[in-house]
Image (cartoon, rainbow, N blue to C red; front, top):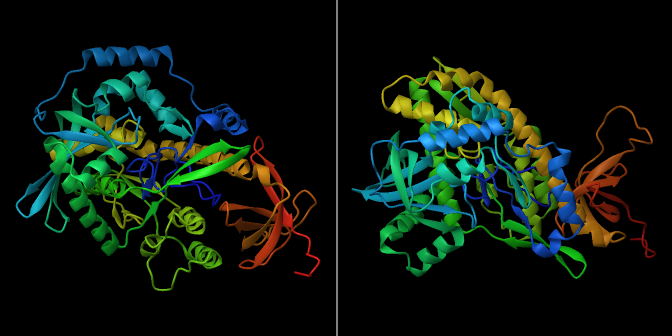
Amino acid sequence: MGSSAAGGGVLIGSSVAGPRRPCVAGRIVYADCVPYSHIGVKGSAAQQALAEALAALSVEFDLPDGFGPDVLAEVETVIAGHTLPEPDLTALPFITIDPPGSLDLDQAMYLERKGSGYVVHYAIADVPSFVPAGGALDTETRRRGQTFYTPGNRIPLHPVPLSEGAASLFANNPRSAFVWEIELAADGSQLSARVRRATVRSIAKLGYAEAQDMLDAGTAPADYAGTLELLREIGTKRIGLERARGGASLNVPAQEVEFVDGRYVLQFRPALPLEDWNAQISLLTGMAAAQVMLEGKVGILRTMPAPDDGAVAAYRMQTVALGKPWEEGMEYGAYLRTLDTSDPRQLALMHAAATLFRGAGYTPFNGEVPEEVVQAAVAAPYAHATAPLRRLVDRFVLAICAALCSGSEAPDWAVQALDGLPEIMSASNQLASKVDKAAIDTVEAALLSHRVGTEFDAVVLAGPRQNGHTTKAGAARSTIQIADPAVTGYCEGALEPGTVVRVKLVTADIARRTIQFVPAAPRKDGS
């Protein structure tokens, strides 16, 4: 499944890397995965102003509302005529591991040993076979680009009969899939990779906590106990390889807003180890897809430059201000792994680290390998290939990779789309980011709504922007951060970056998504 770093307070489903439901289920955001909303709204809060403001986001940002009759008719026809491909791999005991309640199941896995190494069998929903090129659904999915998430709501990329039905890898139902077979050495490094269409059958739909509990207690059924054990083993080794190559990830706990005793409160659930291991399988597959396309000299990569000096300097200042200095000489990925997100200040630093993950984009190529092929947070070439139900570009990557692995030419419909995909995905990601930021601002206003008039100690993160003029409408204001709740906001005045100041909250408007601070009046004792 990035985060909008605009507020240090709450991360809502954006991925430093891509759409929403990070490579895993929304708790761990890796370089470019797809996200789920990280904030849920419990029933008690749903009756309050926060839920109303969040619900209004879909209208305000003109998010898609349903699908046209031509799209639904096409989907119905395609599903009725769909046939399962050869080979039949239903004897392999695939399982899915997703957030509780998820129905759009993109991935299923079966892991096995091979000599001193391993084989990763990773099935990805066969979306291309359900989307006729140039048809009504193809057109509509290009308009959307991805599934959009707001707290408590989702606007799917594909109609529900497809995304939560015929194409979803439900347990006990034969399904068409792109099946990756990736061989690993004893240390977890990749030896080979191929992908082909096949028929698979998942034997179990597991939630993260359920799978973690089974693994810890040794109570998993024999049919898939081995896969869970190897997920831990392979995942741990892949994390070690990520560290060795300088990769970085954002590990953010699940967060839920609740309305208790007239106040909004934020509850946290730290990510489980299994979520990290699961994410590593998606990362492995994205790296394998990039390698296949680079060798075939056709495809589309997810690329991102290393963080620039300015972003690094600003983030270092913030780490000092929040009491967890990033030491010189330490890679930023290594630093992020030291953060304890159960600490509000360090959670804020994890969120703010999204500023180091900027500039991600898509790089298409056909005939010649581009000069820039690395996704800096992954620290390797990488492609989006594991979430076709929720992200448009994955559909094209899968079709191209399967063709190349079979020795065939990449399909014309996929190659012809390559040059237009970066613009489509950029526009979609920008819209998703705007929605994310609005949701963050809304939640932060809710968290502070009962504390108007309260004074806080704050760290000044940045002074006023130097735009050459100051007007009453655009009076100088500085960016500050308070620690509890860990929220970033604006304070009137030209304040010195890196200093600690006393501020007073004067506005926390949920409907307008605004919070505003002013310098607190000096105390009588002069402090």
